[in-house]
Amino acid sequence: MNILFTCHYNFNINAGAAGVTWRLGQEYQQLGHQVQYYSLDSLPQRLHPLAKVAAFPEFVVARIVALERQQAVDIVDASTGDGWLWAVLNQRRQQRPLIIARCHGLEHIEHEEYLEEVERGHLQFSWKYPLYRGSVRLWEAAASMRYADLALFLNHRDRQYAIDKLGVAPERADIIANGIPETFLNLPFEPLPHDGTLRIAQVGTYIVRKGVHYGSPALNTILQCYPQVSVSFLGTECPEAKVYADFDPAVHDRIQIVPRYSHETLPSLLKGHHIKLFPTISEGFGVALVEAMACGLAPITTATPGPLEIVQDGQDAIVVPCRNQLAIEQALARLITDRVYLEQLRYHAYETAQTYSWGRIAQNNLACYEKARDLRRVNYDRVYSATN
Image 1 (cartoon, rainbow, N blue to C red):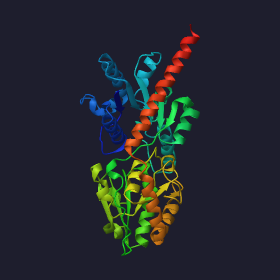
Image 2: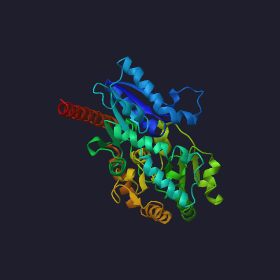
Image 3: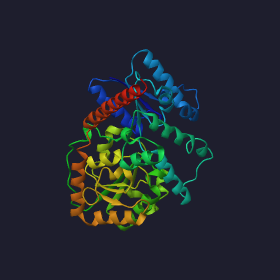
Image 4: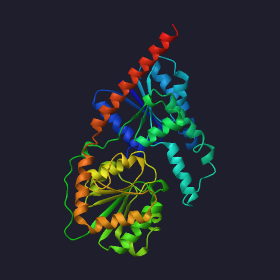
């Protein structure tokens, strides 16, 4: 098959939606499929970044039309919001590419969580946010899912929200996980150090959505209480001073900050760490969570939809309420002081992570494509029979 991926981001394969899109495409290519990517990087460089984002659906239409003329596209796997215009214009055509709306985390739920942070005084919207991101963009995302042949979600809450509030048909809404590279699987499982030291890792951008207003105060308290503990922030995408500002100067020497890294180096960066803190307030899935588990870290995560698809409290993680600094502190303290329990969680988390091979996930995605193709054929035959 000829598959076109669209992604309304700069195509940084080391992070986020672009990264998982690229890795899924690599698996498809290994299975013999032809894959192309279309992102903001594909648009004219002279355009303002905001103009690129706003006009991206129109550019997607032009790209699909060009590929159709070459008979070079069977599947359009589009991030939500990207393919709505093409889907609306072509929904009645039987002989056309299959269009998939891939949700990397439902923007409507993310928007609601942002509103909560605004009320708590942790976030202030720019004047531009309600003009597009908090309005038009949400409409485009919903339309892309309603008109797609299939909408793919990362967790049950996103799917149910889309069905209940956005008008997505249940039979055209499936759940599919993300995966991790083969190089992250079956790594050596290292025992805890005998000297009592422990290292905590927090992987991801240092932003409001990742729960820094709750995780960092908890970590600050823990570092002051337990001198044998250190913390690493990996992939913060911000100046080191921004992170240090949230911590007592007395503990700065036990904080490591790596603003950026190449994805393939993450296992090396996580080597020697034992606890993964994931205090996110909104998460579609949580690839960084699975990757850390595969590297032998015991997760402490919030009860947000994405992580709840991956772990079970008390089995392979400690799950704490969202936006609860005290609960994070208590969970960290428990793992620091109960090394037997920490070792149990680490091993069970490690085992769970082994099931998230991109190879298996790619096969599941291809099965979803076939299901959507069959459903479209049945619906077309039903409509054709009713009109003849």
